[in-house]
Length: 300
Ligand code: SF4
Image 1 (spheres, rainbow, N blue to C red):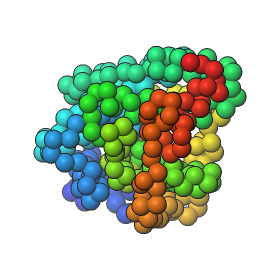
Image 2: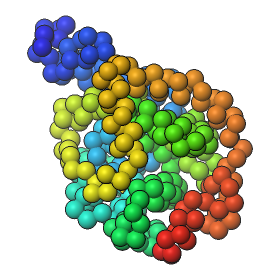
Image 3: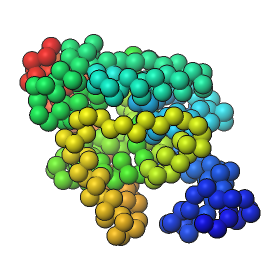
């Protein structure tokens, strides 16, 4: 690999721009892009209290560091929120990493568990159901929204990177779920019960998030969830990575198509968030997916 344009040894080669970059210039480029995404999509404003969804994986830890940097310029408050699904041999380690990163940055950290919030840990649910990820996703989304409200946040930052963005767009199209795609838009305004989501890393490729994490000394846990082979997302990820390899820029193009469509989608579904008859949490019908899931599993 050639040296960086500044003459320093390059640590990364960015294929899409044809540029080798040294550590300093890579970090500078990375921070600038996150800052640009936040500014362009008006994600933050003075006085915001941001709940940072922190699993302890690379994306959420990098997000925490990026927001902590932004906090030096924008007067915002940060509080990290983790969800413990109760997956033995997997979640304990990332929760420890999450706690350590919060301590390093002096950020308050709250943990909410499936066991407490839904009555059963994921390991118990997986014994009964053979598609654990769909249950896990519903319960996690419900608990993180509720958790963000409980810590007094007005926004919830999620560590979705560019790859996650492209996967989510495709998954919602493949499942014919346009209302969920509309809710993916962070500009969808929050209300008293639905905390507005922001995704500052949504334009950043996953590989670059991993490099940034390593350069920042963030401990990485590369162990996959034992239920990952059941995840639809895993299938879409593989398909997208193969397509990207053959047709570079595909992930950017999918994300950009979503940005073009999101205003229309948002307008179409903005009045369709109602209150669940059973628990009072936000939903698009009469009963929310969490209550339906809990009753289906007979776990509460
Ligand atoms: Fe939950 Fe499935 Fe992700 Fe594991 S792979 S954390 S079960 S959604």
